[in-house]
Length: 294
Image (cartoon, rainbow, N blue to C red; front, side, top):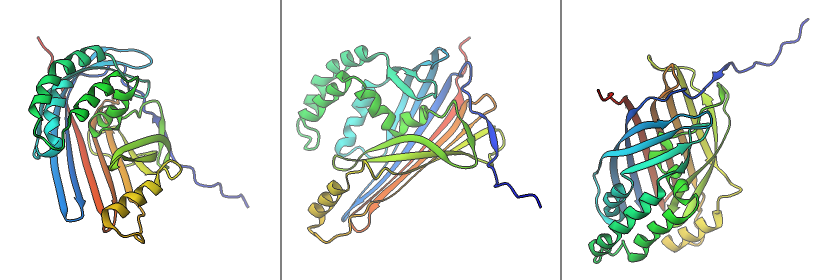
């Protein structure tokens, strides 16, 4: 009698990048819900980008990102800075790697000049703002100076990680396979949440979608500073016997057309220590073709 072979996950074609990416209008919506003790915070921010291809290459492409508009429902606290940050980043020229992930910001010198123009008015504007100190404003300039700092900040954000998810060049199957690392910054104070991600092909996709990818993330226990979390929760609650175990989930979903152009993206990040704090961030990306200029 013949032995049965173990089931093998179906193999699909490689998700290759489009040879000539289309120019797009990209709308990114980020909804944030946060509870800490008896306080609650909610915000919905929407940014509309104009994404234009400047140069195509075999090892990545160069795009211009223009911010067409930015709105948010909560303008209190540190959110007041977002309007100024939008002015600072209203035009970015970025280079992607082979996977389509943002690799470098190419117009940093322009950003530095723009920041120096904005900084005096920002310092005056926030003189009486208790949460926005001169140190916070000056640190923005330090991010622009550092090698790779700005890129790390952008890649960790919902907006730019959706615009440039870095999924090209792989053949995805129905079985999740290791993808890489993801960092969720400042989940509590200065504590970051490092994730290990895995990706699989979505087996059922809507009409008009040729390829779907589903990403999950798990806490990277080797890098997560659990002791720092415990100290922070003890300081908040004054309970030294509190179970400070972090419960977290991270999910992403992407849809591509038959040219492997990104059509839609979504991310959900949820983390909490029950009885202390909880945060949920839901982000979506919708794209549309940018009309050609005649």
